[in-house]
Length: 97
Image (cartoon, rainbow, N blue to C red; front, top):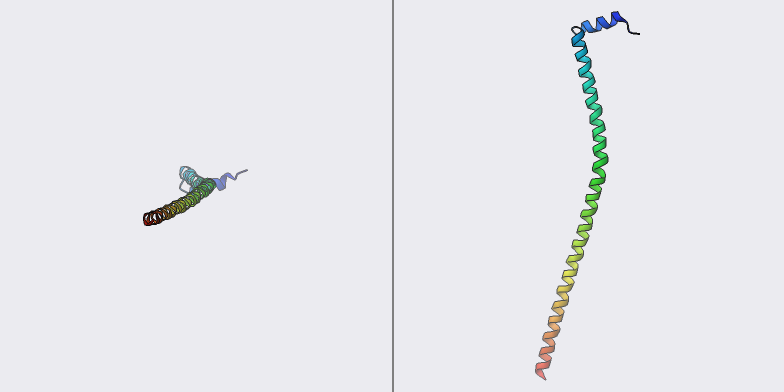
């Protein structure tokens, strides 16, 4: 049980019952905000880590495909150049005959 004398003394230290209740509300609000922030940060972390991981994976896959496409393009270019040289060589040899 509460000691009424202690309650009235504490309320008087805070400037009366209304100010004491306001102080308790403000403290509870600040404590609730801190608790909510911590929970919110935890939830944000739980959501953002998998999302960032997925984005990193998609980006890595994109880079690999981009590199493969670049190599394929280079190989095709090399093949076409070689084919062109062979054709020129064939025409040169054919003209000589």
